[in-house]
Length: 267
Image (cartoon, rainbow, N blue to C red; front, side):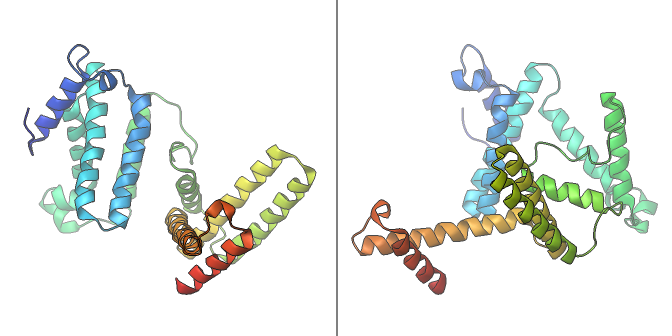
């Protein structure tokens, strides 16, 4: 089988890998739940390539992410739920429906995207989805997926609540809330109640995300940036100690702190 730019070749490859007799034993035994973590991982690797501005890696990682879509679609087809073509049709229908000012009739295109139209269309889609599932009316915040990364979900919950006025509207009160939560963490630390400490720590994180929202700072992106800064500075500690003939595990905290402060100054 030869490579191709045609999506049908990738679909054929996945079908061959999933064949229970002639395919790959690992691929054939996977299911939606076992593959889901890889799907999330591939999405983050796409983000990593974008942040590094590495277009070669981005092309490669987008291919890996596309493979995940084809993988899920193949398993769904085997179970007679839907197939890859249905996935494509669903997303193209959604894009056309959400952009009447681009794909609609002449009157719609001339009118442009009316204020509030996007939210109206999405609300209609959600109502249709609930009707299709046969579920009861959900709470206002239940539309925010529980599977999102915690920082991202906190931000979405806060934004959605703010849309109906449940919000301070400025940053200063969130600082007061953070100080209040720090006090509650201290109190539970002194009590020795580990469960309560974890709960109050979660409240503190939630308040910090809320501060970021009011400051226009994305908490996930900010923490990623700090993670990378920490990695870079710690690597500077490692290099500095190596130059002195010392290993990380053998150095004192004071020695490591000295190299850390030097890395901060050098940036």
